[in-house]
Every structure is written in C-alpha cells, then in structure tokens.
Image 1 (cartoon, rainbow, N blue to C red):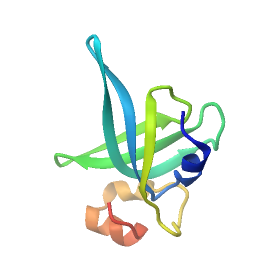
Image 2 (cartoon, rainbow, N blue to C red):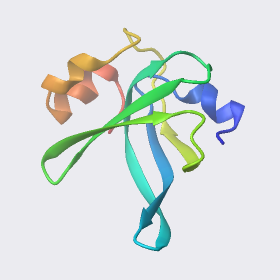
Image 3 (cartoon, rainbow, N blue to C red):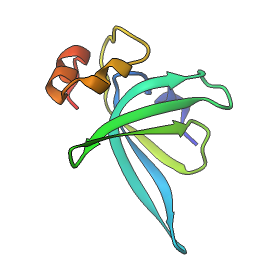
Length: 108
C-alpha cells in the first residue's frame, strides 16, 4: 500500500521508482522500475492507476500500476516538476529524451 504523502506527489512529470514484487517460478523478488509518470487516472478511487514510462536498452516501456495493488511494495519520488502544462503527458511518446527534459522541465 502506498502512503498518502507519497500518493499526493505521484503526478504527471514526476520521476519515480516503483518497487514491485515479482514471482519467478517458486521464488519471489523485488524488481525496480524507474521512469516518468505520464498519466494519473481516477484520483484515489478503487480502480485508480498511474502510468510510468522509461527507455530500457533503446526501447520505450510503459507500465500501468493500480494504486491499491498489493504487489507494489514501495514508491520513491526521485524528483517532481513545479508545474506541468497538462494532466496527461502522452505527447512525450514521440519526443526524444532531450526534448522531454526541455518540455517538462525535469531530468529523466
């Protein structure tokens, strides 16, 4: 479960690191996924989600996390922009990393 203080800081443009439990065979480990939040949907309802995007080995990867998921162990806020022009940052899908930093105003 995510704390309310951290939950309020998960907003579009924020760079975060999500620690999630992953089951591989009969073993369970904690995997980290770091990237930029591009969307936050449905506020704090039961079905609320946030989407995190990053580039791994030259391939862009997006993951959608339910806020109330028991698999999320911890969320760390790396940095957060002061002001973002939109509530959904889907337009960064077509931008390079440098252009993204210029538009959003944070380092990724």
